[in-house]
Image 1 (cartoon, rainbow over the protein chains, first blue to last red):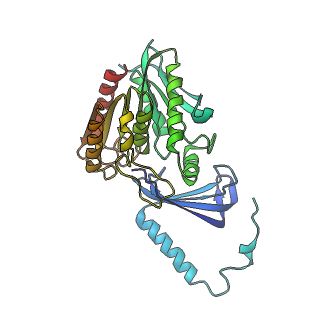
Image 2 (image 1 turned 90 degrees about the vertical axis):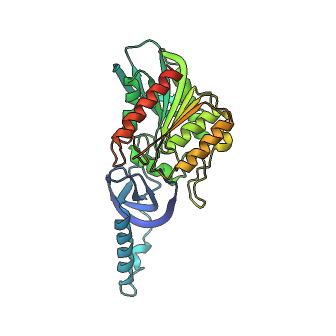
Image 3 (image 1 turned 30 degrees about the vertical axis):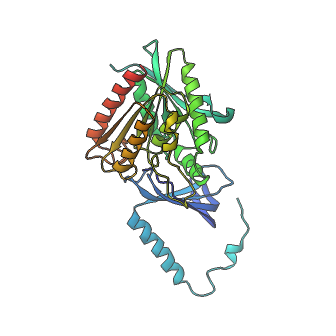
Amino acid sequence: MCTYDTETIALRASGKTAEGWRRMDSATVYFDHPVHFPAGHALMIDVRNTTASPATRVALELDADSARSLAEAILRTLASVPAGLLNDEQSTLTEVR
Amino acid sequence: MTHNLEAITVTMTGHGGDEIEAYLAVPTDVTAVGSIVVIHHMPGYDEATKEIARKFAANGFAALMPNLYHREAPGADADDAAAIARANGGVPDERLIGDVAGAMAYLKGLPISNGKVASIGYCSGGRQSLLAACHLPLDASIDCYGAYVAIDSPEGSALRAKAILDQVGGITGRILGLFGAEDQYPSIEQNETLAAALTDADVTFTLRTYEGAGHGFFAVDRPSYRSEAAVEGWREIFSFLNEAIA
């Protein structure tokens, strides 16, 4: 089925797209038919700059186990960061397109 | 027979008078043919669905597939456009109906049109094909495993698809539904509910469920492809169209 459940979050990030590195401001997460990954359904992540062209997008398609492993690895990594580094001055840069 | 065909990108007038992109495939060795509006799935106006449009032309029908995401991302790759359309909340039902109406008008205006038009959709497009049938004078409509026809999509989702059983009284053409027995969305129970609603509405319909197949069994580029169900399903589709619009 085409699932309709979609999580959308705002974020501050940079991503390497087909156009090179760009600032990103949004991500959608959903479980649906992948474009490329060889499975009927996959966990899909689209990281985008909503003010730029449709091609300003980093897309990821993972199977469910891989998605969980990735999410857990992200949380483990963040949990192990020494105090004081998580919100350093780099993250306060204003958006630059 | 396999017909000669031409397949091109065109501009058509969709909902609200919007000019949108569409993919047109027509047989070139006939003088009068039935037409079909091809409704792409949620992953978008992609190569696989264009191939389906060409298959209809090769089998003697004029086919037009509107790019339902053209407004969100004109000229974008199908996958990029689909990502934006999803993030923006998907295609509203009203807009879908308007775009199919525009596609019908375009097809009826073709010199080779015999005046009859059908619709077909896969996955989310299956629901949309039935939805269009509820509101437009389509001669026939085909629903290939469309979910959320008999039940609403879960609450809390950014994208919502509402059940359309309360609208089937508006159907004037014939209906064909093709489903996989292993599919859960739509499930066999949901399809039985659809059948009861169509019966109550005095709609002429045929629903087929194929054993050994799940969702997306027509999709030749996906692991869900099931050749036996797909071959039989295509035979059913062309038999249905030859009776309804040829």
